[in-house]
Image (tube, rainbow, N blue to C red; front, top):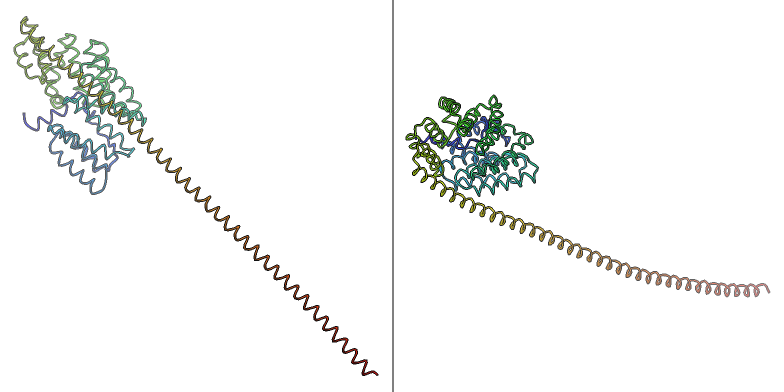
Length: 446
């Protein structure tokens, strides 16, 4: 397999690709020129050449101080890192995106879509417990922010995890809940993919009538999203295989083989599984066993080979494959239990961290309140002290003014008394002078 072909096949490792009907949404509302470059990269999302494109968009974000450009660059880098198996760098890109969008309300839809994509990668590499923690955190954020888009993605990821764990009923419940959020989130383009996912789980539970009804509903969207053709046709093939309706299964298989999109939009294991079922249905058991050896998981290899040996009447090897299958299921069950314990432990730790953060926040608020009260008390005491000092100063000034006024009045009275005394002396002097003059005149008149 060539390197380029490998990345083309990775582009559809799940039947629920991110780009429903090649719908690439400009969630960060960047200018058209940058968005066209980004959209081109998303159309070849696993191509290593995207690393150069991603870096150029990121560097433009550095130069322009635009967190939006940086986010677009990182979101182009993430799928390539996944395809290369560089999961540490994949985790780092997501962590940086989370930090960049923090505090930007209009970037939340982009954040939810990135986490949804990241969770699909986590499930694919067996980190279902990490995906579950991310999905639940996304759900809590969506509830807090009243954003149905985040709730839809959260339930969709939880549904994929339950499907991965073969809990079909729980998977259906979460997919149906996600579908209920589609209209509210104005994300109707996601509905046909969810219908297909529901149908696939209903096939596993034997609810064939409902599965076919959901296939019909999904097919109604093919006019708007042509890429749904492969998904619905493959789902019908699974349905006819489960029912033993070989005529319709062969018709679906032939149509898939003739469709140019089949190899581009499906992953190698999916095509291998389809080939095994086809060969077995035709009675080509030797070829079917050889093809089954190419299946990616031990569980699938044992399951299909058990059925083929049973059809051949080779009961000893059939029993051996069944025993291996049961052992594999036991190990998977133990793994799931360990994952559940890891999730529970992580969520308990997260709950403790949230409680500690709430306690510290309350403590900080109390400290701030106490500080404010102390500052208020100091300020109030300072005001009272200044008022008391002012009152003391006013009283002192009033006393001094009273003393000065009393002294002035005493001085005025003394002056008035002195003036009265002077007036009296003047009158006496005048009288004496007058008397002398009168006596002198009397002498002259003799």
